[in-house]
Picture 1 (cartoon, rainbow, N blue to C red):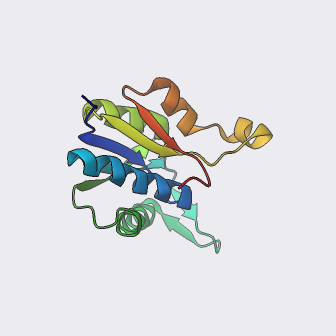
Picture 2 (spheres, helix red, strand yellow; picture 1 turned 135 degrees about the vertical axis):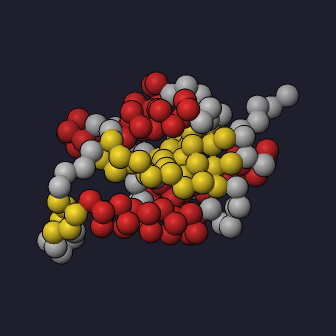
Length: 147
């Protein structure tokens, strides 16, 4: 009997790649009427942030913007799939995602990768790579350019 994916964790960094991962998560969820946990982790906060225009703002504004972006990602990529939860947390993205996967007993993690290579990958690291290596459940990776 095929495995049912009742709880599917889908991290997002608000990129188009992570949007495609949400669309894949919906496909898996529809098969077993599962729930998609669309999660964004705000990397360990500092007191102030700068937006793309150099404007300084506080953590409360960052959190509010992230909540709005989560809703936008769900609305754009989940195609009206009703069984979803939006999760916003603060901390190390990998550690927080593993905690969510464990605490919520995720049956599947659907994540994206930006396909970075070489020095950029070495410097930036890869949350997706860590998830693949340490996840407590199967992981489906939507690579850049896949549909």
